[in-house]
Image: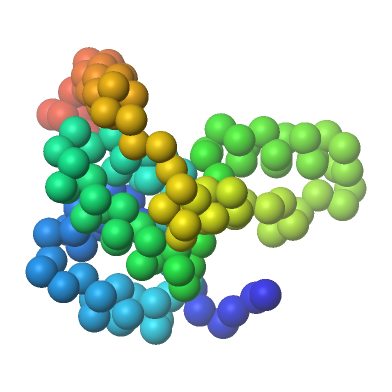
Length: 146
């Protein structure tokens, strides 16, 4: 279903800010009244890799509230793969608008609470994300990004 609202994707800075609110529901309701909201798979992955369980649970609740009236976006590398395959298969009929970007399985998991938050896996994911961030910052020092 196509809506007349603009679509916005929530990154982790937004999820973290909403999780810090005493009551994020009014802010989320205001966003949902003006925008079609999407939670990218990467943002959800970073949220579930949060090492403090109480913060992680707040982030998961924020994701649930957003996804309940919005949706999730497929991981960027999978989405790129879909576009390449669609273009390769149908170059004359290709349109980026016709490539599915929603991640319905993740939406179902977020809404049902049926995701695995194994603490060992959380620590592994957090370490992997920290290593990736360090590698990124080594390639692109902060003073170059200003």
